[in-house]
Amino acid sequence: MTWLERPPAIVAERGHRAREPYPLDTSEQELLFNELTPDRRRIAQFAVNTGLRDQELCRLQWRWEVRIPELDTLTLKRSVFVLPADFVKGKRPRVVVLNDYAQAILEELRGQHPRYVFTSQRGHSRRRVKHVIAAGWRSARVRAAQKYRDRFGVDAPDGFRRIRVHDLRHTYGRRLRAAGVGLEDRKDLLGHKRQEITTHYSAAEVGYLIQAANRILSPSRASSTTLLRVAASLPARPRRSRVGARAPAQKARVLGAWDSPAKLPRELQVRSRKVVEGFGGC
Picture 1: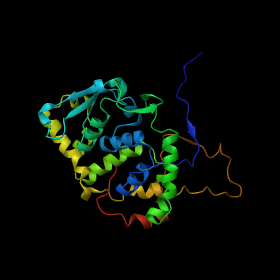
Picture 2: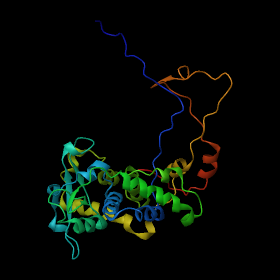
Picture 3: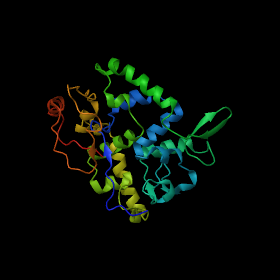
Picture 4: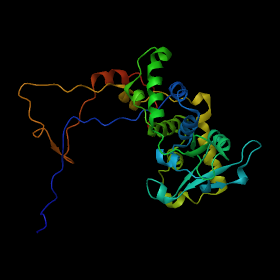
């Protein structure tokens, strides 16, 4: 056995189109969430106000909650969650800041289960939700898509028909940007910043981030259409069949090779002119 002189080329077929994020606007959120069961509706509402990922939501435990009495108000007792590194995608601890809406949901759930925050009723007991994307989510998504035309007068976009829990994270990030929250603060709230410093917030710093997260709760901060939303709403373009087309193996390309810049589809060029200035993703 000898060492290879160079790594082997990894090939992939052309034509694959990655799924674009689909941030919800407030009307679409209402339509979708109304089709969810009460247990999963709370999870979705918490996700769209914290940016937590699917498994971070399902594994969220009460013992990770840290009270901050200095920030208590007359109606809310303030706390954050400090997620251990083993439960975070980046394998570093993460502080989860709760706005007023997320904090209120937390108080509704307190006492339902001794360990996990999000559970569902199974017979006479409550058990941890293992996956947010389950049969209940998929059926709610189908029902919401069927009602889309009656509500908005157009067919549901492809992105809405295939909405994922991770799109709620994109929705949160998009709304933070639309509300004027700066890049560094958005990174903190979404858990993107350097984690070696974000677990050492002072109470004043947490209070500042709570104020930033609360900005998405204002009715005047409704998220506007973005180019990512326009792209996600476009149907997948069918592949053309040509006489003498090359075999799939001949159409394969080596990953990492530079491709020539592709032009936007004409439909996207036309529709993107209608997008308001100041668009952004997360």
